[in-house]
Image (cartoon, rainbow, N blue to C red; front, side):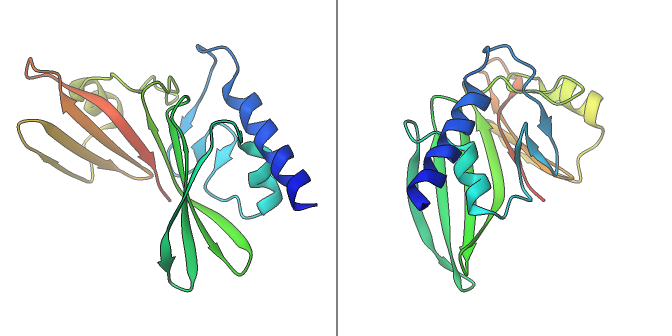
Length: 162
């Protein structure tokens, strides 16, 4: 039964991210990326969303009476962090990096400049910057920007959080 659930889970995830590269993949701060949402708690639902062929599962360690897992899909640019306690899984963060082409409703995605990000999202709750990186923290989403070598910071990674 568990194998069947896992196969269903993996098939659905493959379908979600194997659509046209320029599909309308949507980043939703505090919620998730497309149908991958932070509030998923059913192992069957998780099994129905992920692709086994690209899955790289790591046991990240025990914490607060449960185990944290990292499910990585490098071909999609998606990493999902899960927490499992008492046979219940919960997604605690969803990360996107290249080659992910998802965007927020206002067009922010990988490659967006720092200026565009602040113009569209407003002032971040917290931020810090050095010569090579800049981090901007907004409600529900954290942005990591890297200097492109021409003193221009571009979004290189983002993390959806509660």
